Image (cartoon, rainbow, N blue to C red):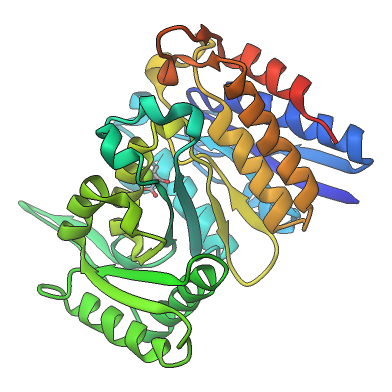
Length: 354
Ligand code: IPM
Ligand code: MG
């Protein structure tokens, strides 16, 4: 198959981790006879420096016209003082909205090789951690009106029934492919938007009678994720709650550096990115963990290109890397072999088998 992939290296560690993911994709194309064409797209701080805009129109257009987008990370202290509507993160939000990718899928799964890297007690980890957060990505407070007037700042949190329904359906469908348990997370004891959220989820539940739906308040959910993560199969939640809970969920699996994500909308053209940030403090030192990005590339092959075998080859290579005792700094433990970003890429590429 021929596929055009828009590649956003971005800022901080973005370029280093993307480089490893591209080498992995090259190896897949060589083994399976595909052609992946990569087109560089500027977004984030580097685009502000070059174009005075975190995502110029023609860059967004390249992404929308591609078969999918692979993104490293954007942002950094260097751009803290630019006006808020030109921040690097605005480029990312504009990209998500411009591509219409409303459904963000963030897995929290512990690799058996990394059970001792989790900050949770062994007795909790041993019960198993394997759930998915389905996060609404292009609505809510991120996209409501933002303004500051004198000593007062306002951010509007707004959801319509149709916005809730389309992400709710993804939650139910995701649960249907797994253990058929869906937990809808909101703050319906305080927020109108959450009461609407809950109402829509229960209306949908009548169509998905094979799925067990439960409700949980977001503060309780934050607690339950560390108390007993084995209770969760699929969590569906709004944009900002999903942002916060997915950082928490990633940490209990050992490291945020390991977690990939996919974002999809109405078409097969998706946005794939690790869930961590640009980590400017470790940029250029060859110590970042590229695995979240490499696994995001695997998700792209599976969800956007229907290349299940190819995706599994990448995931198996990551598992083989861990089995051989290699670790990047963020997941390092006693008796393991410490490797840098590039070396991690070398070893994973070498372990990819058809
Ligand atoms: C994420 C990030 C972004 C978000 C930032 C960089 C805008 O934290 O992808 O989780 O809040 O969505
Ligand atoms: Mg986040």
